[in-house]
Amino acid sequence: MASFSSSNDQEDQVLVEEKSFARTLIMNRPKQLNAATDYMISRFWELFLLYEKNSNVKLVIIKGKGRAFCAGGDVAAVVRDINNGKWESAAIFFRREYTLNYLMATYSKPQVSILNGIVMGGGAGCSIHGSFRVATENSVFAMPETALGLFPDVGASYFLSRLPGHFGEYLGLTGARLDGAEMLACGLATHFVPSAKLPSLEAALHTVDSSDQAVISAIIGEYSELPMLKEQSAYHRLDVINRCFSRRTVEDILSALEREATNKVDGWILASIQSLKKASPTSLKISLRSIREGRLQGVGQCLVREYRMVCHVIRGEVSKDFVEGCRAILVDKDRNPKWEPPRLELLSDKMVDKYFSKVDDEDWEDLKLPPRSNLPASAMAKL
Image (cartoon, rainbow, N blue to C red; front, top):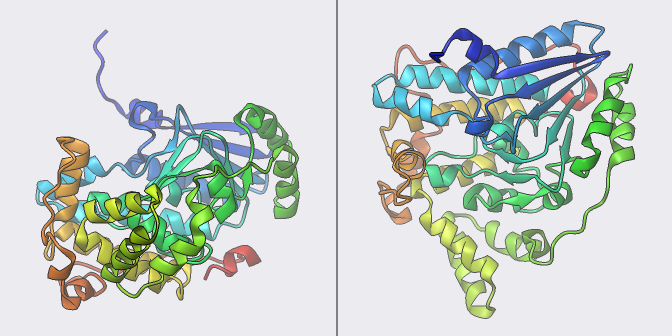
């Protein structure tokens, strides 16, 4: 039988299960590691709004089919738009994605994200903002954007900047991976449940006739464990991370790491230096500033600023590193991007400032976030 893409294929990208008071949304593009398409983002938006109004729905569960929760946004489609001269279409994708992140961050009902696999980039955006994030022994978290010529977006400047010490700068600049135990230790996950117990946990959640955060937390708690951090975990090196990643500039951070490396032989420090040297210099500079600004801003302000930044990235006036990074990592897979500017010292403050300014285009406007009312205290705290 001939196979052809139809709207039905699209509809299968998000599967919905209705069980008593719970609604479960399943991202269903396992071959693409559930990379979030424009359709998936729009569908989530529609369903989240619907469930918020429906008094029979008490909580929303999100998970992914296969070995990923969600490995990020579908950037291949975005880069196609940019290469075809349609930066506005690319901007619409990010506008929808960030607006969904805001809805999740300010949602009036509990959202339980089951992170049993890869959670990266946009996948973090549609889980970390929610009330409960359940990690397992299969979880792998990363914000790998600086290696792609992008920056940790989807509200990451809000949630990374609120991790202990300067752990957020470390994760955002190096793209380092964390396992489930590390996610729990630093607060990216609220619970750790062994994957073998997930079916029982989900069955228990299906029967909860309550949107009370404490009730939901207690139920997840019954299936939770406290995993041991592995000996070589970066989280054990928080003192070194704080010493180095608290520095004012990316250059200062690199120098501090290099000084640490001369004092003691540590593969972890060398790997961090290597990651920073491989990343896009433009990405590193705008990412550091973004996370630093995010510390003092609410989640809405962070998303509005990140939208300005991403529009400058996709317009490529200062640097075309995003298109080049996607070519090298995702398309040709030669893993050898030619960054431009190629070195940190070639980026002036003026070039960096440009990413934080309004876009000079008469049709462009700042991200307009939807008004949210009757918010629970947990959501109000984020504003």
